[in-house]
Length: 296
Ligand code: BV8
Image 1 (cartoon, protein in one colour):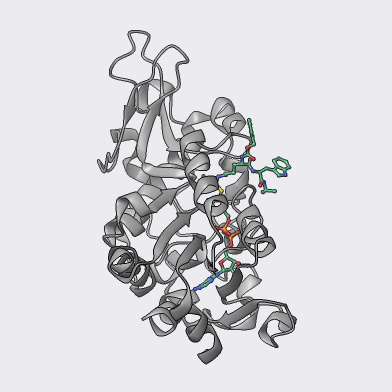
Image 2 (cartoon, protein in one colour):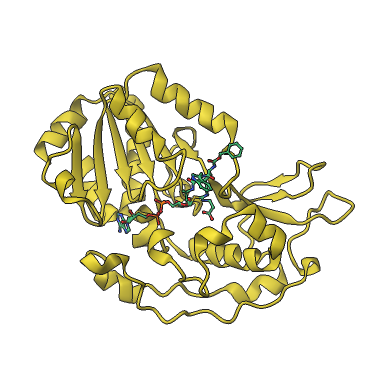
């Protein structure tokens, strides 16, 4: 940790790349560790335009369940540490940004500086019209449930059992949770969130980036500029499996320009933990516990 902290103190340009693991301590499930958690569906299979086209009622129940749990969740010490760094960076003459793949809104609620936070996959609390002719977007809509029919998706994601297992090696095994969900039910389009502007009553959809959809260009350009403009001294890779493109491309882009990497994850390969990976530190554990120790 000392070598890392020495480098941190010298770093003038830092990027934090955040994934679902940062929100685990706030009680929210990851994508990878939660296969089949949501009513025997793979969450990845629900985060696609096709899934929404085929069964908007099912996808809206999935997102209503995630909105409910994200609203119930509280930012943890990991979110707050990054937020504090974002607020203090300028006074320490540090250029800092957080790139989050998470859509749970917890970084903003932790008072992270808005202009230094890039929610590259959007937010559960943004809604947008599905009609090509309409550009209606509703930001920061925390109404819960969004419609009467979606009220039944207020399930508790009961991860108390997981908490005890948080650092166990069997984290990747199927969570031994009995699904706490009522059966997914048929919901007609008329009972789903509708665009208030469109005359033809188009559906609203969650303002997130689904698999197969491109990320907001403005966001991508801003991140590219930050990474390419000048050498990033350090990228903090926090609670992410690195499976999703283009988020996962940022680590190599920093490394190839001479930046160093610090990984905070409950699941880290031995060669990284043993310091065998060049310019890479690995800190195994819960990001909510590790970040305050490492960064404050
Ligand atoms: C794009 C929003 C191009 C929705 C998300 C093959 C087929 C089809 C597509 C592709 C393909 N190959 C590549 C692609 C592209 C695809 C992709 O990467 N697919 C992957 C699955 C292979 N990418 C895209 O489609 C992207 N778009 O490429 O556009 C394009 C260009 C022009 C025109 C059209 C298209 C869009 C990707 C965005 C998808 N949307 N989210 C929603 O959230 O519902 S991504 C989604 O996955 C979430 O954001 C989530 O964050 C992410 C999963 O990643 P992680 O955050 O890393 O989460 P994960 O569960 O995987 O890992 C958790 C980690 O935490 C683990 O390592 C675990 O060990 C660790 N952990 C657990 N507990 C803790 C912890 N760490 C610390 N502390 C703890 N306590």
